[in-house]
Image (cartoon, rainbow, N blue to C red; front, side, top):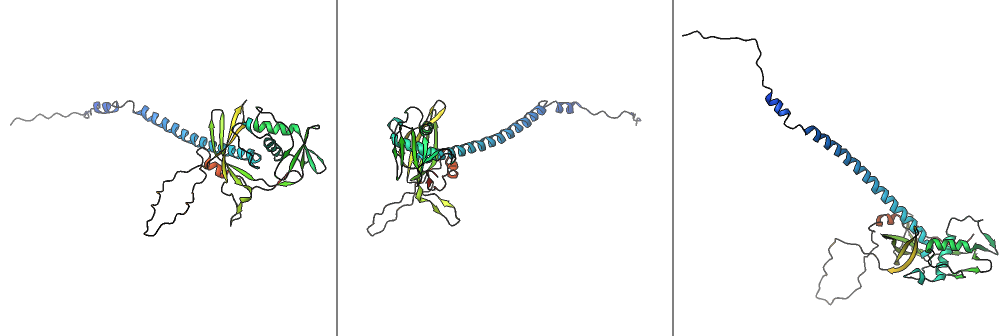
Length: 292
């Protein structure tokens, strides 16, 4: 048998790197894709944070606006003025009454006005300013004596002043804005009228507002960058949607007796401002001191 020739070499076997290089070059864009995903994740996080801040800011603005509307409307609804479709059709005496009460309920110091024979003297120009702030300049005020519920604001044409008696007056209603609907150059407020004498105290000592007696839509119209009351119109109570099925009536062999069905309609949680309005509900009204 022939001898076999065995050859030895001191060179280490060479491993092929072709497959590894191919594997490494298979997805050259993977790094950039990962980087893009990371960047988008950061952007998404920032967007969520900013959106949350924006929503919170929006809710705060809505709540603040509703508080301001409620405060502005206190002298407007307190004596339950007549409705009007346009400011030109409103009762001028009632507009003057609202304007004077707006002055009285403002932040005035006790020594701002002069007192004569137990009457506080308010200049006509202050009443005009309050009137213009509420109702604009489309229909100018025609100053005259105002007769209210148990009081009278006497107008002095010669001195151009109003005499305000030193007495207390309890408002008929207090406002609670339940909806704010903004359209181009108008804002329509749905306002619940709460009876001033209907507030109760619960067992925890907190004041509980009464159910609204009625609802009124108050239209604010923009003019020269400001909004003024342009109309006050009666409206029905807002409705709320319910997902509970209506119970089927029970039938008996006895003759059924008809009974009135109590309505469970409640003020709607306004689309734009319902939750905020519940927090911005008017506080318990107190007897208003005309002057002191």
